[in-house]
Each structure stands twice: as C-alpha cells, then as structure tokens.
Length: 318
Length: 238
Image (cartoon, rainbow over all chains, first blue to last red):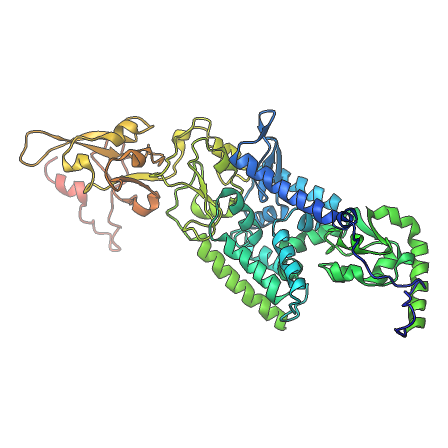
C-alpha cells in the first residue's frame, strides 16, 4: 500500500488503521480473554463431569451425571450421547449397532449442527488445550514452520479413515485417535497414550503451526462439514473493517478470515471456523461478533455494495 | 499425483497398524456377552461405560501400549474375577451392542474357559483341596469333583474337572486357587479346545443317531460288492 511513514495508514473504508492494544486494566484484559476463559471452563468442566462420575460417583437425583467418555456416554442415566464420526466408522465396518448409540450420535450431530460444527474443536476437545499451549509457546519462541502443508490433508485423512474402516473391519480413526486416547486415559487410567499427546504437542510446536488440529485431524474435518450449515456463525460487519489483520494473526484457521468472502456474506462462511472467538476479542473496530446466519441475510445487499466500495478503495490505495 | 501416492502410502501404514492392533490379544478375557474378538473389536466404541457400571471394578479399559487392543474392556481373573451379577449391568451399559444385549442369563455367558494344569493342581497331586469346586458360581456343574485312583494307595484322589458346556469363564476359581501361580486358569476356549469332527460315531452313547453305514459303490460290471462292516462280521451266523 502506498502509505508514507509519516501519514496515518488508512483502511479500505477510509478510516485509520488502528492496531490492537491489550488493555492495561485487569478488567480489560479479562474482557479480551473472555472466550478463552469460557472455552477452558467448558472443556475442563466436561472433563470434570466425566471424571467425577467415573471416580467419585457424582449423581443428580440418584442418576450418574455423565458416564462413559467422549466416544459415547450417557447423560443423567437416560440421554445417550455418541461421537457421530466414531459411529459412522463402526457402521462402515458392516456391523449392526444398538439403537442407543445411534440415537446418541444423532443427538450430538444435531447439537453441533446448531452450534457450528467445529465448535467441538475449540470448546470441547481436550486436545485443543494441548494444541493451544503449543501454539502459544511457538509464538513466544518465534518458531518457524518446517514445511507447508495444505489444510486439505485432513479431508483426505477423513476419507481414508472411512475407507480403512470398510477394509480393515475396525473403526480406523478410533483406533489411533489421540483425542480418544487422551480423554480415555484421563478417565480410565494412564497408559502410553501420553506419547501420542506429546507427539501432537511436539508436532504443533516445532514442525507445523496448528499442525494437528489445523491440518491432519479428520474429526475436525468431519465437524467442518457441519459448520457449513450451522446457524451460529461469526458475523462480519464489512464497512467497519480497516483490514488491520489482527484477527488473521490470532486465528488458528487463518484461511477462514477471507475479507472478500466475509464481506460478501456478512459472516465467516467457511466450515473450518471453530467459533473460538479469538478474532472477536482482538478486533479494534468491533467488526466481528457471534450471531445467527440469518441475522445477516437482510443486509446482504448492503454488504455487497460495501464490499464493492471496499474493493475500489483498495484498488485506489494500491 | 504426489498427493494420491502419499495418501495411499499413509493408508497402507495406517491399515498395517490397525491390523496389528486388532489382533493384539486374542487371549484377552472380555466382559460377559462379548461377541467373538473381531466382531467385538469392530463394535466396541471404547467408551468404558461397562467398566464404570461394573459393581466389583472387575473391568479395565486397555490403555495405549497394553497388550490388549487399545481402549477395549477386559479383565484379569486372578486380580478381580467376574462375580456374575444376575442383572448383568455391564451388558446393559453397552451402547453399541458389542456386548450382546440378548444375553439374559449370566450363566449363558462365555467369557472364557477354565482349564486345569494337573501338574500343579493340589488335588491332582494328591492333596485335598477342591477350592475351585466350592467357589464356582455355577455350582457343581461347571466344575465337578471326580474320584481318581491313586497309585500304590487304597485312598482315591478327588480331582476337579471343568465342563466346557457349563463353564462361563468368570474366573472365580482362578482367583481362589491357592497355588502360587493359579493351577486353574481362564483362557479363550479356541486356544485349548479341540474338536473331534463329525465323522466319529460314538456307538456306545445312547444319544448317538443311527446313520447310514458306509457302502461300497456299485461295480460297473454288476457283480456283487464285498460285504462291509457289520455285514461281514455277521456273515454265516444269522
């Protein structure tokens, strides 16, 4: 962009580009960290409910709160829950399943279809904590990527795990999944599973940024398919955006923050968005917020116009 | 093209790992109602609800690196056997049906088969023990005590025998066996059980069906065939 050092950088909307500044007050910091705090709370309390029910016999009205693990569980002794991807793999091994687990899978599928697919990844999956830790350390130590890998690899892994389930007769991903391994061993006793977790950590830290969650994990790819239709999305108010790029820097799936596409649709359309909310809290212009897919349908005309304007401004600036 | 070959290579390595894992431990003792190993491995979602609902903490979920297929439930009878709950809570807890929901009577379950090492069994050595017989939940059916003549002595030995048609493989006997290493152990029946085959006719057994005897096929030239079996023995006498 043709901007001199002494003049203020202008965004495509003509407003000055302001960088994100971390508030000095503790309250302000908490506000920036709010989604990370919520996410950790959800992740840890899910884990705690499983752990408490398994080890300390937690009950509500005589019923165990949450038995099993993230592969399949029973809530309050009646409501079945099951990992739809795991159930799909078992189904592909050509075995007849009990109704219970199928109902469970449908329930979980509907929940994530409503909440936004990969909301699983950033709000529930225990590996997320490992991956986030690795990503944070990586930033602190400014480690560079060893190589570039397309993020479509995970779709290949997804297809591969379905094909292998048919061929080998066992649920292919479930047998090697570090997610299930981690969660299972946290609840039912530690074995060599920590090695898989450590592997993910090292891979994410030294080899590739967001290597596991962002490139390889087929479960994320599976939920990403749901994200394409999910009602809860991150809305994008194009006219206020100055293209400062703060959101892209914090986003673990930075491809989803395509300004052009976001401006056209008025929201983050890609199913790969994990709804983690990082971008919302760092945006200095409050351009981004959680909302419903339909909330934006009325503005689609105006957002198109603004995107056009935005484009022309952009061209003028270049 | 590179991508495809990479995917194929990855797939091959992955399926090798799966095959290795799926055949990790055919000797694992599974919860009641478990289907045979390959069906069980396919259907088990590794959720551990059977483990949690076992009132005796018998079941464990195999962690990674265990000899048993990853994440699947099993138990070690010598540590904690299956006490054969009448309501079978582990089977009820199973959401996928890897444990057969049609199992209603725990006595019909076949977790394994108790086998006796007669070289280290106290009773077979000549002492009076019979602990396995007394603790067996399928009382006096799965394990019976039989007389056995003793060399150079008037006194008979009383030795336990396991009956495979009754034994559930719960392992209470293995847990109770007083020898340093259990002389009676639960194993997967396939590892020890033979099969005589259907061509043997046990004529002295009352319930053996009378079948057609072996016949020599007809000669081409129409001459009579030599008499076979019983006909030969009976020639000239009847």
